[in-house]
Amino acid sequence: MEEKNPGIIALAARFPSRIMTNEYWKIHHSDLIDKRRENILAKTFTPKESNRNTAIFDRAMSPYLIDPFQGCIERRWYAQGESTLELESLVARDALTAARIEPHEVDLCIVCSFPPDQDLGVGNAAYLARNLGLQGACWNLESACSSSVVALDTASSLIRSKTVRNALVVTSCSYSLVAPSSEPMSYANGDGATAMVMDQVEGRGVIASHTINTGDTCGIVTTTLDLDLEGKPCKRMRINRGSGARIREATEKMTLACVHGVLKKANLTLKDIDYFAFNASLAWVIQFYQDLLDIPSNKIIDTHHKFANTGPVLTPTSLFYGAHKGLIPEGGLVLFFGLGNA
Image (cartoon, rainbow, N blue to C red):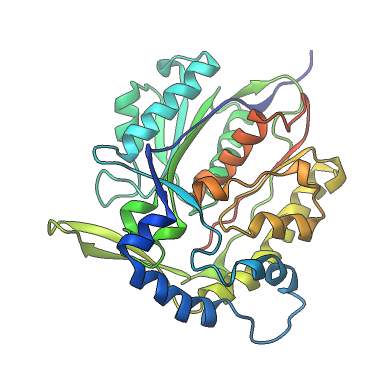
C-alpha cells in the first residue's frame, strides 16, 4: 500500500464587498498622493548607485516610479458591518464544505489573523473555533506575510508525524483596520481571507519545505497603539523611512535562499515546477520573480492589480487563482513561497 502524505484537499478564498479604486484617494486625499509623488517615490525607491544585487528588482520596479499609486489599481476593504472574524468564518466553512469535512471532525485549526479585529491580542483562533463549532485544538500563528506558508509547513509536519489526522489553516489580512485611508500606506493594501484543509493524500502531497528568518528586515514596519475617531485604542501600522531600499536589498537574497533550499531538499530543479504560487505584494514583484528565477509567464499569476497587498493571504490566493484558471495540471508540482518582512 502506498504511504500517504500530508496535502491540501480543499482551498477557498473570500474578499470583502467594498472595492476601493484609485479615484477614492484622488477625490478624498489628493494631498496624500501629491506628497507620495514628491517625497517618497523620489527618495525611498531611487537607487543611489548601480548594484548588481538589486539590478533585477530595480528593472522590474522602474516602470512604476512615476505612478503615485505604484501600480495599485483596486483593493478590497471591509464595508460597514463586515469584520475579519466574519470573513474567516465564511471562508473556513467554504473550505470544509469543499473537503466534505464537518467542523467537529477537524483535529487542528491554525489561524493567522493579521491583525485580529476582536481586541488588541494576537489572533481570532478561539473566536473562530466558537463560531465554527470546532472541538479540536485551535491556535494562533503569526509570521507576518509568510504566515500562510509557515502554517502550511506546521500543519504538514503534524500530519506527517500522525500527531493530528487533519488540519484547517485559516489566514486573513485586515490592513484597512491598521492603515486607514488617510495614512500613506493605505492605498497599497487590501483585505481578504483564505482557508486550506489539509489531510493525508495519495501521492506526493507536501514534499519538502525550507524556511529562513527575516531578521535583515527588522524595523521596516512599525505598529503603534493609537486612538480611533471614537477615542478607542487601535493599532496603526506605518512603513518607516528607508524601508524601500532595505526591501530591495533583502528580497533577492531571501528568495534565492528559500527557493533553492527547498528544491535541493526535494531533489528537483526549477524546470520541474509546473506552477509558482508567489506573493504579489507589490505591482512589480511577480515580474521580479519571473526575471530572477526565469519563470515562464504561464507558470505564475499576478493578483496584485485586483487585490493589492493582502499580506499572508497573498500566497494561497495565488494558488487559488492558479487552480481556478487551470494553470496547475493534475499531479503537477507547485512551489509555494511567501516572504514576511519584520
